[in-house]
Length: 157
Image 1 (cartoon, rainbow, N blue to C red):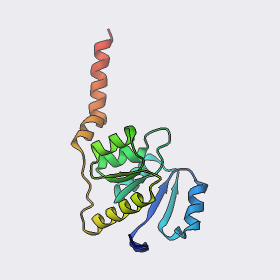
Image 2 (image 1 turned 90 degrees about the horizontal axis):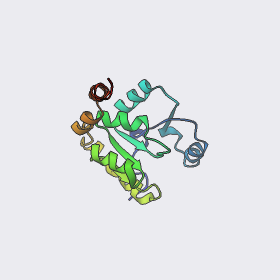
Image 3 (image 1 turned 60 degrees about the horizontal axis):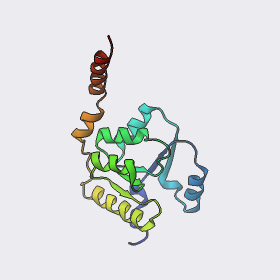
Image 4 (image 1 turned 90 degrees about the vertical axis):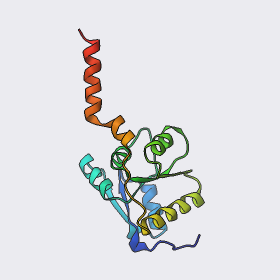
């Protein structure tokens, strides 16, 4: 892999969430300010708009729960690059977004190769949203509400 493979004017990282000093220090240290945009804490409506317009969604920190970005992205058929290996997050992501890439967060070479692979797909026009019908069926709010109402009618007098 060669350094500088992706032109800086062809990539933007938009960050949604609390101010992360460690992230900012890394961005400054590597001179990445020109490709970084911090959106801070954002409403679900704003997150959805950012996700809709994204070509790839980077999931770098899974914390204690599944992020809004993941569910919004899955509902829109987005491609993810997830820095996480194993467990329910990887299973969920690859079940509903098999075109995404999951790599170990400590493998610099795997992360670099994944970024370049996604860039190549984008450059060739092969990075398309692919909505999972299974995800839509499983997590459709109307269907979930209907099932809950049906269940409540069975368990109540």
